[in-house]
Amino acid sequence: MAALQTDSGSRPAAGARFFCTAGRGLEPFLMREVRARLAATQVEYISGKVFFTTCSDLNMLKKLKSAERLFLLIKKQFPLNVSSVSKGKIFNEMQRLVNDDPESWMSAISIWKNLLELDAKKDKLSQRDANPLKRKIEENDITNPKKLKTEQMQELQESRQCQLEKQMEEETVEQGDFLTNREKSQEAFQNDVVKAVDTPDQKDLTFRVSCRCSGAIAKTFTGQEVGRVIGIALMKQYGWKADLRNPNLEIFIHLNDIYSVVGIPVFRVPLASRAYIKTAGLRSTIAWAMASLAEIKAGAFVLDPMCGLGTILLEAAKEWPDVYYVGADVSDSQLLGACDNLKAAGLQDKIELLKVSVIELPLPSESVDTIISDIPFGKKFKLGKDIKNILQEMERVLHVGGTIVLLLSEDHHKHLQDCEQSGIPLNSKGSHTDEPGIEKCLNHGEKTDLSDTVSSSSEAISQGGLDKMPPFGSLVPMECYQVSLGRTDAFIYKYRKSHSLGLLQPGSSRPRAAAQQGRRLSWDPDRAPESQGNRLP
Image 1 (cartoon, helix red, strand yellow):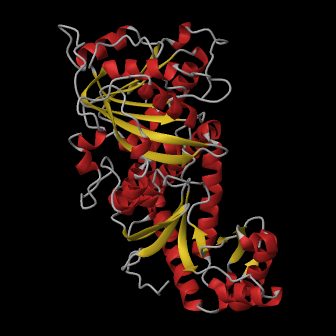
Image 2: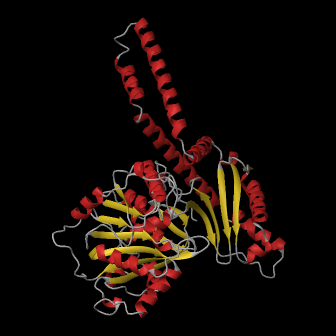
Image 3: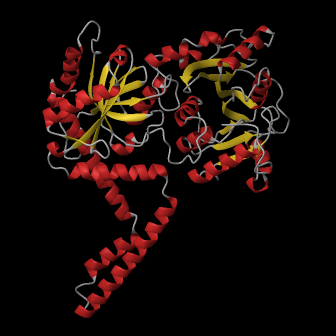
């Protein structure tokens, strides 16, 4: 990484080089997001990582939704050669990651400290502005001294001190009651920020090395061995001190058969760990990615008919707030968890919850703008051919031109293919490639934002799966993404409804009729039995 000049603020004038880790299959979503949210340039990806350049500050970087972790890039280069080479030579190659380009290291450390310093200053200003009592007293300190006698000044000083002490005690108790594990981690991170910012000399920095090895190098070295070699090189080259428990700085290294990457974690807490989600269900990054595909617009009616703990609706409502959201499920335990999540996120007034079956939705035909849902799968949820009934009911309530985004397993996909072979009618044009709008969605030159289709090289990833997606009645396949859920993979499918089924109920208006009916049937957590439920997140 070339040396970067910094301005009088604390952000790089020419932009800093970052990279984010991402779940496998989510790279296209992250590429689109950094372009739209951060105005990033030089965006490129390799499996599991997206690299980009941006001038954004930490406040904007924190808003990334499809990333797991964020790093300031120090180096990215070709992989180490471990074939027919002695261990000693490989160790020397590892040390060159530190020794060959000290300017890149010093530049990255300077940018890292400047970013943290700017963030710390903003936090102090926001805390000061958020304390009206302190601000009012400070204002009185400016206007009153000339008018008050010495005794009055002393009385005011004592009164002010008591008020501040009382308020600090109340705030401490309140914060102690509501401090989450994430906030505790963030507090520890802020302590590191203070120590790093207050460190005048880079030689006084403490550090630790986190190393991940995969591929051929993992067969020769462990992560600990590599970390030890890099750590010794850093101490010799820059005079830093190792501290494995509470360092100022963490150095992240990933070595595999494709690349060698070195970076600095920008935040201690992963971006994927949402502070506003009390109980996690579907991974938040995948939930956000699904919502970003759904083309959600202000005033729309968005439904998740198998909402579970409500993760998809939470992610959607945080990003697109001016929308009417409804979540439905048959399980009281899941709805109770969803209700708790809504309250924790402050979204209980934004999202309605219903206890209904996905195959018997109490909504008028063609009343919903968008459907987003994670269809459960695994040994506990043997839906089998029920996937056909589920999609038929979704198709019924979706209006023409509306979008469905589903997370489906390979088994679900096979059942959809079986439905096609069993004579389920195709769309009227017989082939999804003739559907209006497909060319726009796959247009490599189309300018994108958070609600547009993935562009550039990421489009090729989605286009490859279209041939495997069967149409379902009036639902025309638009995009397909294979994503990792950890031990298994799943597919994000996007469909658009091409034509009416002729089932619109007379006298019903969309989405008002559906909204009114939904409110009448809203699920009441106070009446729900605590021990019911047959569905997991």
